[in-house]
Image (cartoon, rainbow, N blue to C red; front, side, top):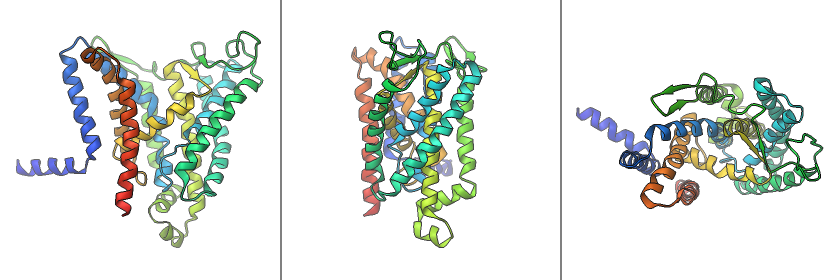
Length: 351
């Protein structure tokens, strides 16, 4: 019995304090939910959907962190590539699983090019990547906001009704591949819990693929570069090439992630919307126990579960208690607070 308690204490010590606080807060929210009119089954069902739809975007943070670059604050670069892939599919009215797969393929092709250019730029600003990534993200979103008005898309479902030019702010995917992953092998438990089997399987598959990737020669080179660049050079690794591979992979995952998110959400959001995707993804992986220098697939899964469940549960439960909506305030506190915590923790480790 004493050994079990010792192992439990040791396990708790390995968990970051913010992660432990959020876990305890979630437990408290579920306890409160039992004493309100909120359906716990419905909350759990919504949480599972949000975990699946945001998981790949969080996974996109992993390669750059393991390469020693830090979280990819330039995630909008990959998101733009994913949006372009979907827009082309919508223009040619390719629907169903074929449209979804072709959108993924186009996204990968676009983001191989975008990621290479993005990696080339980051290589020129060594040591200041995270700051420059943020500027790149904002710049790319501003540039594409202009391009959405100029690109030659002509589908009546996509362009403004008045004038017939320029893409709308929000495009529906109802007639294309809306919830194609969510509804695949979906099943119901009890009265209100629906399990989106296809969505979770896709997230699990992506995690497994990335796990296997970091067992390959390229993945090990990225890891070695992030841990000790001098040792990586002495071992025959090209650090510049390893970092470039990490940035390209992160950009590709960002494109895949936004397509998965859009099919689950049912809409495609353009213009300034990609800017809102970065900070929740960064906060999620940090909540899972990652730092800005080390991360694992387990950190991605745990962080996504905690962050998305917190946002999903807090809205209905706290609105019952406070008679108001403080979810957006909580999201900002948690996401920005976790990023600040990770940055200050890194400074302490360095000193």
